[in-house]
Amino acid sequence: MERRLAVGRDYLAALMRLGFQPDAAAWALVDSETESRRFELAIITHWVDTIGSLPIYELLFEAYRSGATPREIDPFNVSLFSPKAQLADDLAEYAAQLDKAHDPAPRPMGASGYVIAPSWILIHRPAPNRRHDDLHQFAAFKTNVAQLAA
Amino acid sequence: MAAGYAVEFALKACVMRREGLGAWPAKKTRPELYTHNLRELFRLAGIELGSAPEEVRAPLRTVLDWDRALEYNLTVISPAQARTMVAAAFGESGVVAWLIGL
Image: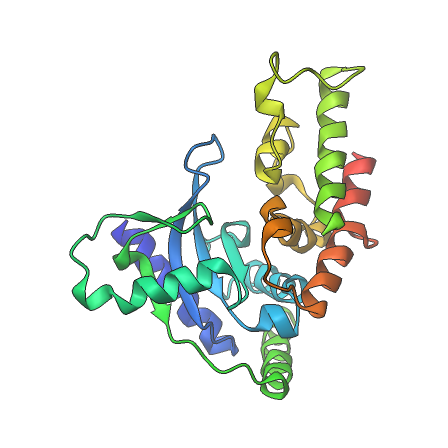
């Protein structure tokens, strides 16, 4: 898990260098009851509401293809969530309890089916939703990723 | 969020084609097929996510976020997100067109 956490931090740092500042991010164990059980890097971003997730995923794949993000994290294992999603609320509540967390064991986040441990939370800094800034910042992210492929 | 259902049904058609089924099996004989989990359905249909052409990968990743439980969630999905989900499912490089062409 230590390796996964380190790679997750590297991935997020790479995104931030390109201009994508997630509101929150955490590793989560998903579909743990099925054969599709896997770890996903869950990213909370208000861009999901203002831009939509498809254009963001397009840039995540492009950044991955260009080698600007770590090879260990295929974008198929990255999930984008709106701050309005239940997972975002659950994560915020969990993060607020981190200082006094007595139980470091992974636990399910509400009804989302995502299982997260306190130490798996990599970023948590809810940001205000400002549509004008979002469009401007997303355009900068898009330009930076496009320059990688050029 | 009918876009998610369209992908679910396209995948179930892929399962039928793969197994040569003329009708959808009863739940008591094939309980594993009674799922709305798209990743599970891709696995059951024998389709690797990584086999998707480059132009379909982002749409595919987008539709995988669809969850039937969204229907029961009172949180409103933004217009931008709804538009991209529809584009991911039904666009020219969308997932439904890709699945039909396999």
